[in-house]
Amino acid sequence: MSGDAAPAGPAAALNRRSIFAWALYDFGSSAFTTLVVTFIFSVYFTRRIATDPQHGTVLWTRAVNISAFVVAMVTPVLGAIADFTSRKKLFLLICTLQCSICTALLFFVSTGTTTRALILFVLANIAFEASSVFYNAFLPEISTRDNIGRISGMGWALGYSGGLLCLVVALGMIRGWLPQTNDLHIRSTNLLVALWVALFSIPFFLFIKEKPAERTGSIAALTVEGFRRIAATLGHLRTYREAAKLLLARLIYNDGLVTVFAFASIFAAAVFGLETDEIIIMGIAINVVAGIGAFSLGFLNDRIGGKRTIAITLIVLIIAAAIGATAANRTIFWVAAMILGFMVGPNQSASRSLLGLFIPQDKDAEFFGFFSFSGRLASIAGPFVYGTVLSSSGSQRWAMASIIPFFIVGLIVLSFVDEKKGMELVRQVPAQLQE
Image (tube, rainbow, N blue to C red):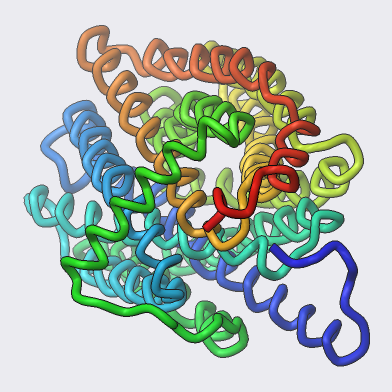
């Protein structure tokens, strides 16, 4: 991790450029989760591609489960290999290209192509989620302990801004820029996302520097080394106990976050009958408040600490989720959605920056691989519970209410994290444990 002293002169300008290029990647990649996972393609799949909306929702939960499981299994290994070979940018490039290409191919799915649509979505979603491991691993390299919360918050805020602008363009496409024949106006939004992701990733690969790879080897050897380093990291987690507690807490509460955003638009369409353009408008509003929340509470994070910031967001998320699940009309649901949107950015940003303070040097990608592991492994349980409750009860409201316990239990586990002790451990642990 970089030192605490802020750079000056040309170094400061270079660092600002790196920070902006890093955050701009989030600006581009957020289009995928905003349009494909949350607000447009997910609803299109359940309404038009699947045989019926309820069956389509259950299939969508399983697709999210599969991609989450794959990412949870492979990203810790990939993170370890990336650290060992100093090839985080290469791994990120591969993930970015896979996400963009598979998303573009979603343009060609239509009614009756359920299997093809699910396969392409799973491949794109795996690449998107895996990319976050390598992207997040650069955060400690471009920040200091004094500004990591603000920089992380800026990344989330710019990400929500990217999702917002992409939604605005998509709204124009759906409301009249393109013909509706064969759902062309909706399917074309996948091409928009693919281009958006690829275009805004370019500055990252141009301006973010990574030290040259000093260690290479065969795929088999690198894989063995990856597992060896993971085993070592698991052992180190007994030493870095606060990081381990944080990862466990996030494994639980992130389940609620992933589920609510993966199925909020499906819930709104099923319970309140919102059409695609209405869902997009709601998505635009959510992204506005989410960006404001991520940016503004990034400063709060630096002032009161990551643990307190996360705790505040979880308490509010519990209340908002309860309101949304029991909302009697669209207006109340809108209020709950805005509150959820305002809190989800700060929650994710504070989680990321707090882990950045708990991890040892030269193991950024490896620990953020576990960060992704904690998020994605949890993402298996949330959508699975949502789909199971829906299929057994037939009620979207009960399914949405099933996410609340994840926030509650995650908050309880978080209460055992000692932020000050976690930062002290990184400085005090003997250097040989960080090698």
